[in-house]
Amino acid sequence: MLGVDIGTTSTKAVLFTITGQVVSQSAVEYPLLSATADMAEQDPAQIYAAVLTTIAEVVKQASASDNMCAEHIILVSFSAAMHSVIAIDENDQPLTNSITWADNRAGAWANKIRDEMDGHAIYLRTGTPIHPMSPLCKLMWLRHDQPDIFSRSARFVGIKEFVLHRMFGQWVVDHSIASATGMFNLCEMDWDGAALALIGVDRAQLSELVPTTHQLGELSPALARQLGLTITTPFIVGANDGVLSNLGVNAIAPGQVAVTIGTSGAMRTVVDHPVTDPAGRTFCYALTENHWVVGGPINNGGSILRWVRDELATEEAAEALRSERDPYDALMDIAQQVSAGANGLLFHPYLAGERAPLWNADARGSFFGLALHHGKPQMIRAALEGVIFSLYSILPAVEELIGPTRRMMATGGFARSALWRQMMADIFDREVVVPESVESSCLGAAVLGLYALGRISSLDAIGEMVGSTHHHQPNPQNVAIYKKLWPIFAAIPQQLTQQYHQLAEFQRQQ
Image (cartoon, rainbow, N blue to C red; front, side, top):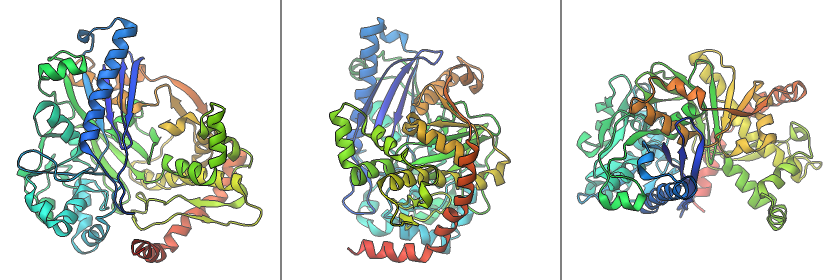
């Protein structure tokens, strides 16, 4: 079974046996286009090419090493990043790049919708917080700030819809991706008429809604040959990457939490019905009709580690490469030179604004408490701790809504670092378990595909496929330190809202 994850920085494809073992895998990266501070776009044609390349590569690898043929692949299923928007013309050609979740140009319209247009009521119906990441806000921005493009648009789609249309000629969107647009009514399982009226979009301009278990049509003979598959290989539309990550780490039982740090990060748990937050702090997205994922995303995850590498540790990273070591291992070595709490130095990692629980695109990063005795080791450790503190800040809102949580399943690139995993256990004061497959969204997509085809009767079958390679228990001494620092970390952003806005406005004028 083949899971494909169309991500923010790369597309990954992983071929699994039906018991969850990895057979082969491939990844293709692509750039983020950022001509201005608030812009974050990607070329949809590059992403489509990456999808085809990764699928063909994993099939080729398996055929060469395992004597596998195309008929052995029982399904292909998709995961994809949320919140993207592409304007499409009447000839089904893109008028824009893919405007990603990280694009903040709709910030002023997000504020206006939230403060003046009953945005909270829209959130309560749709489960997507009012924020520039939301396609609802992006389309309002396009309508008013890019009227020529908006008026020439026959439809508006996300990146997965674009890819699937190129492959199958169908404009369809699964309930999971749709539930992250701010335009999908969670209770009615349909487009929200009031939200569409607000932004001036007709439902005919949006894709056909289908369940996450929907099976797509047949491949063309030419595309089947290119991919190394048969024309009748079942393709399942799948879901968004966040909810599939929960499935992929087997965090679908009550009280279990999945924490992911990729480019950004998120904390999520599964409930059996839609749940929104009266205070608007969390999202609620669909996995299936009986599985809904509640949680919150942060904007700044692995991107902070990359910034630290490029701005604070260039020499150490270069030396690691010369020694054929991972440069990120060198950063961890530096961070381990100081103890928990970084000698009283805090880092708020809002280099790209922040989503949950602040939902403030104008938030800006800062070191707090910097003193003469602090140096590079403290700064690097504080940056790592700041990412985990940001994730931890989502927990109170989630537990208010769904009750106590216990075990945490960790996934994403950060899960390869023992230091970062232990930080999470200490800051959250909970056991952290790391599954064997860090590509949880790919495994989640594949298992959802099994469920769609009736090869398993319940998603609980994932429990037999997910092993665990690392268990981290909280260190009581570190827990005590972090409990002292946490209230300070949490209070600062609340006191700087006005200053964040003033400074962001100044930066935009530069």
